[in-house]
Amino acid sequence: MDLYEHQAKELFDRYGVPTLRGTVVTTPEEAAAAAESMDLPVVVKAQVKVGGRGKAGGVKLARTKEDVVAHAEAILGMDIKGHTVHKVLIDPGVDIAEEYYMSFLIDRSNRSYLAMCSVAGGMDIETVAKEQPEALAKIAIDPDEGVDLAHAREIAAQGHLPADILDAAAATIEKLYRVFDGADASLVEVNPMVRTGDGRVLAIDGKVTLDDNSEGRQQDLFAEYRDNSTADPHELAAKEVGLNYVKLDGTVGIIGNGAGLVMSTLDVVAYAGEAYDNVRPANFLDIGGGASAAVMEAGLRIIMEDPQVEAVFVNVFGGITSCIEVANGILQALGQLGDSLTKPLVVRLDGNDVAPAREILDNAQHPLITTAGDMDEGAATVARITASRLGQLDAKK
Image (tube, rainbow, N blue to C red):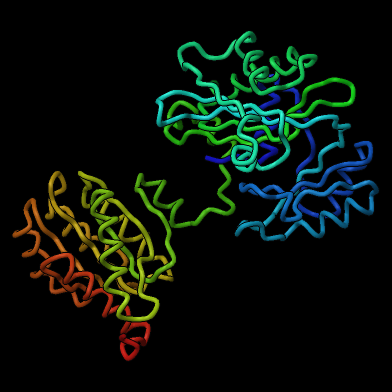
């Protein structure tokens, strides 16, 4: 889970990382009020979970109160790489003498942690790695040993930070590692980490990604920092019942069991939909290996409530999952949704208990259910039904 900059810096503060603590606001008037308590100049910073804010005009220096209001008005509502700015951070200005780069991340290829440090901060680190590779130090970190002050000083030295601030930089770096380790983060990045005119080393920016796999032992942290304001409501509903759901931009709802089968189903439906205009998968939904009828019902309900979906393809190969459970779950969901249900289903079942499951569906004789013998047939059928509902049958290529 990515954190906003203001959340990352709040987390830094808890671990003793020297940083700046500004005020988050959502209106120009609030921005002006926040700046009243700070010495000018201040910095107005878009709060979005994406890089490139500065290049997009999302970070502005305000030297007057009028600048604060004008910059807040310009930045709020701005689109930065598909992310709309709903709030800005008003940060106190700081006298910057030099800018550095520092990060800790998980190095999955080497099954270890990695520290990256550079004297060339304040710019895109990929650019530094490409144009000045000698300026970017990469140091493997043993998770069992961690980073103490001596190791942190070595990291700073390898990043070519000036000798006279190595001790101050090491203190900041060691605390940043505490954030990385203590919060179960997969990334802690500071760009820039700065040297101020009076010799301090500050993390004036911050990017933190919490490892989703750690949510079980970091429940308080996830609950505190989770932002559902911009999340898809169907993804939230799926998460509440433990389903793996990802919203896509098509019109065919997809339910399957097992990530591999669901991914294959997306491809097959997309291929079948090429015969028409705008017939593509609307979601990824994996009901899991041992899904019960209740889970099937929950998944189907989530997809049926998506106004973008015109038809649904249920593609299940029963291994651990019994096809009987799937068939019963489909009928239970249809019964619960009742007259509000108008979207047709194409169902392909195979594997464990497939014969009695197909018999259950056949005996139900539900007008919205069409069965398919295999995945290709099911994909072609659901693409045709969707195109018909969209008035695109004549658009077949």
